[in-house]
Length: 316
Image 1 (cartoon, helix red, strand yellow):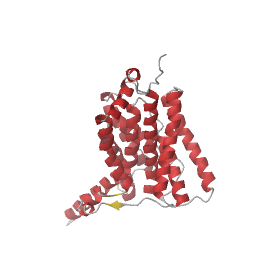
Image 2 (cartoon, helix red, strand yellow):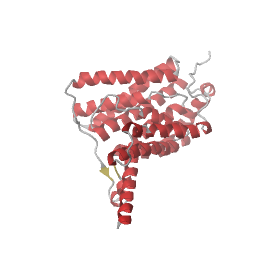
Image 3 (cartoon, helix red, strand yellow):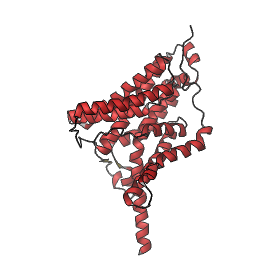
Image 4 (tube, one colour):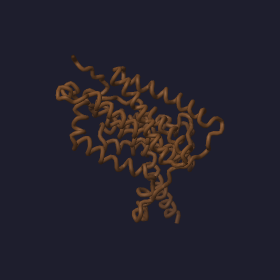
């Protein structure tokens, strides 16, 4: 009987952990899929954190103002795209250092969202706004064990996973993808063929910002139903780590996003169940430690696009 109870507990722990990992990977996957576009076009997108943070705030404001969480998600994506546009101006038009530009954007977004939250809500910030619910997939969600794990999530989780093959197809099977990758590898050669390098890169930072903004909206409306200051808490940087670990590939970032989501889910379940007598602060470090270990083991084996991080100045 004792062995049966232990096996049942292990099974329930495993199923709950995997399901939670899938939910927690969603924001990382959306951010890193967007970063695939910027990286492949030659832009180092350090500003994912700021894009997510703006998306999370605007999504809550939109949901609160219009009473519809999907309007909030759309507005959150647009806010992320606006931040992406700012990154584009600094990195593409001005030609400033992309790492510095992204870092400034993250700090700017942190201060701006705190200010806007105070202006919009004052001291009476809503404790909860209309949020995104769980949408079980008919029939599939009833499958024993696998149903609740794979097919009982929110629509944005399904969207993020389904987006992986779409981004792969666009990047590797369409003329658009060929152009993006050509700009990221050899912008001078692409320019001589009549391809507008700035236009391609601007398009990619807008796509990246939109997807990152939706990722922020998923966190604020799909998991918490509220906006809190600095609620992204480094997830944008984890998404960037997932991009590198995934070798700038859509399928690769799916695996790495799940890995980091699983690390985050594990520390949350350990906390909630009191399985280990370890300070909470140490458990919260687990996703970041996993990111450092993974990058230390794989960073040397992954070659980024040749022109990534290098401003392109058209020769006259």
